Length: 223
Ligand code: PMT
Image (cartoon, rainbow, N blue to C red; front, side, top):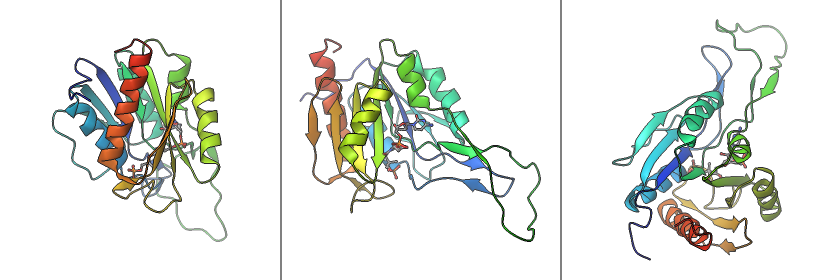
């Protein structure tokens, strides 16, 4: 494969967790470090793409030449991602976006009180699903973080979110998923190509994902 095969392409990538505020002190989040999404951003840049990275809170360094938009909540991520969506040729959603947020955000620190505390949660917008419903020229790539029936659930997400390709990872497998430097992925395309990869560094996994995207685009005359 020649390098530079994404020259001239605009790639939008999301990475990292979101934080959903409870009060000025507390928030809900998840274990995403951003490593997978940042690795894809670096790999896409190395292939000559123009890269926009919409990133939740992480401690990672932004790869050279990548335009970053830092966000906190799922709502922020939605707004920034949609802003860059129209111009993108390829969208890759590696972020772990909260599905729920507290219905009410306390403006003052909530004081300790006797007894239990229940927090009512409401749904956030599904960014990827919204993009799938409004897809034009964009090639849409989602992730599926699963702990069981990985292939089955990934195929359901591929369909229901109107994606071209889905990257599935079993987040309970050793060496896969959140935080670490490695991942074990499977890619499934809309036209029925399926590939399982061994344990790889997140940077190598990023290359495999891009390679599968490029093959898909070539099959469909988009590259
Ligand atoms: O960041 P790391 O520590 O390197 O970990 C990598 C990872 C495990 C976070 C990554 O490999 C991964 O699996 N990312 C997707 C996590 C996730 O939220 O998966 P999901 O199956 O819940 O969501 C499916 C897809 O819908 C994802 O592409 C997600 O970005 C998207 N989504 C989900 C909810 C929502 N409100 N909006 C979305 O766009």
